[in-house]
Image (cartoon, rainbow, N blue to C red; front, side, top):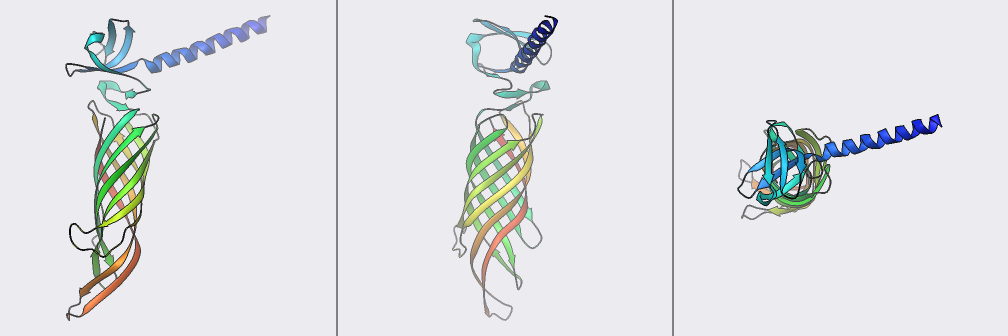
Length: 253
């Protein structure tokens, strides 16, 4: 009898602990008002008319439901931090960024645009495009310009839920050749770009992200020029454009 009581009490305490943990996780909220105001804090009580919210100054405000345009819960839809900063964990997002990399012999500049969806607080997927400008150093002191417009699928995984969220991401697609409006002789090919980075929380609908990645772009072609004696020089190439890229950008919503 005693063992049954102990077992029953243990189950009761366990279920209560789980329930309290769930309640604690779901208390956070961010509220957008029709007047443009944004309130972030902890839901104390709510009914059909009002939501009582303890904001991060420890003050409690009463928000009429009729004034609420949108309301998000934490952690299902947002991760909320002190001072009202947050990360969204669901919904659609847009991002823009630029990157640079290379050496004194070659270099790359890249601008990209991604539209995606957060599947879970940790996983996101999307599609995107970019404009990639590259200078490649070949043998015999030859340089070529090889520019691309990649179309790619995008995937991202977050490692933590802190204000600075570290992530691993990858882009996989095809880089279409471009000549910036001029004639070009290089071909397109597979475009692959893995990266690791950090995403910073913000009070606004845009958040800064920074990353370091590695670019792999397949291309081949023929470059024709003249040497110092004005003799024609032709170089055939079939290579992987590869280099480290440093990226900085913004993600919206």
